[in-house]
Length: 145
Image (cartoon, rainbow, N blue to C red; front, top):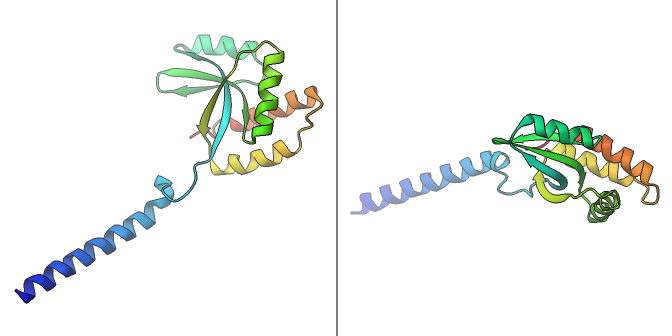
């Protein structure tokens, strides 16, 4: 009886140890212990065909198209900071562009880089805002997870 109890406890201890080691080694892959790198992207449409998405890209300079399953999503802006998010939303509404804010996950590199871009934006100059947004959108392409 004593040997059986020791064997069960030993098996349980080994199981717990292996589980803890596996979770620790895979934490970056599953992002269990980290916050996700989410930003707000401004979407102007979702299209089933690439041709329609390409037409929307022509209407919105600096926009990007992202394939999401069988659909193509067209984004015209992206923001991390809430102040910049409101500024961009107002900017698009002033130009009669209907946008839909959507939370997206991006790479860690882009998430850190967007801080630098947003810190350089002058809130009073819409031309600079538009140019900076277009540059940020160029960087966003390929950085969406």
